[in-house]
Image 1 (cartoon, rainbow, N blue to C red):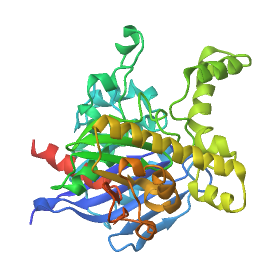
Image 2: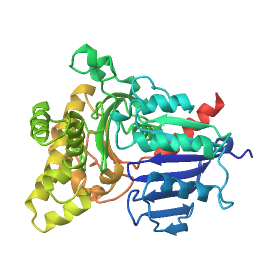
Image 3: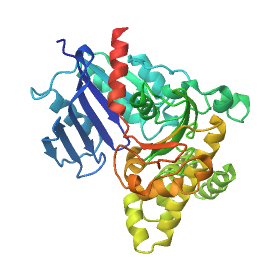
Length: 398
C-alpha cells in the first residue's frame, strides 16, 4: 500500500489547528490532530492526540507570538513520533479577486494572497506567515492553498456584484463568501443523495448560511469579509451603512489619523459587536444560555437577535431556491445548541420546517425533523480537514 501522509494546517487569529491524515491508495484515515491556542498570551495550550483520542502532547506554554506557536508545532511534527508529511494543505480564508482556485503554493502566490489580507484581517496574516515558513521548514514538500472562497465561485454575478461605483468593484470589492470548506464538506457527506434545494447554516463563533442548488452554491450570507451576513460572536453581520458612518465620525473626533480611525472601527465591528456587543457579557453561546437561566435580559436579547436573524435568512433562501428539500445545521452552535435550533425553526412551519422535540434533543449528527415535516432537517458536523485532504490529493494527481 502506498503511504501518503498529508498534513493539514488551519490557522486562526489566535490559534493554529492541524491534523495528519493517511491518504494513500484512496483511503482517508486521521492519524493525529492537535492545536496550539492562546497566541499572544502568557499561558496558552498545546496538545496533540492520536486517532483514539489519547493525548501525546499536553502543554501550557507561553505563546507571545505566532513564531513561537508555529515552532512548537513544527518541532513536534519533525520528531520521530509522527510521519513526515508527503504534502501539506493550508486553509486560506480568502485569496482575493485574483486567486480563485485551490493550487500549489509558491512565493509569488503568497505575496498575491497577502496583498488582499484586508479582506480577512483576522486570518490571512497568520496564514501567510505559516505558508512562508512551511516552504522553508518542510523543504521539497508540496504545499497547497485550499480556499474557503472556492466553493462560492459558482454564485452568479447578480449575487456577487455590490451596488457601488464601478471603480471600487474593479478593486475587487464584491461578495466572496466564507466557510466554503465546511459547506463543501456537508455536500460531500450527503453524496450521492444531495438534495436539489439545500440550505446549510454554519453556526459558530463565526456564523453564516448558504443556499445550495444541486450541490453548488447559489448564495451565501457573508460578503466582502467574514464580518458581513449573520450576527456572529463578536461581528455585526449586515448593518445599515449609516451606522458605520456614525460610529466612524465619533471615532474620528479622537483619532490621530484616518488610518487609526479605520482600524478602531474594524475593532468595533469585528471584535466588540455581535453576541458580545449586545449581551455585554460574552461571545460564547454557552455563557449566554447560562446567563439566560439566571434572568439576564441582555443575554436573552443577544440570543434572540441571533436566532431571529438566521430564521430571516432561511426564509429568504427558501424564496431564492423556490422551495426547500433539506436544512442542515453545522458548526459548534449548530451541532450543540439544542434550544437555538428549536428557536430558529419555531416560526418556519409555513415553509415546511417542523422539528421533532425529542429528535432535536441531541448533540451531534442526527435527523431532527418530525416524521410529517415536508423538509428534512439534519445536524451534520463539518469535515473541513477531510475536504482539504481530498483537494490536496486531487492537486497532487495533476
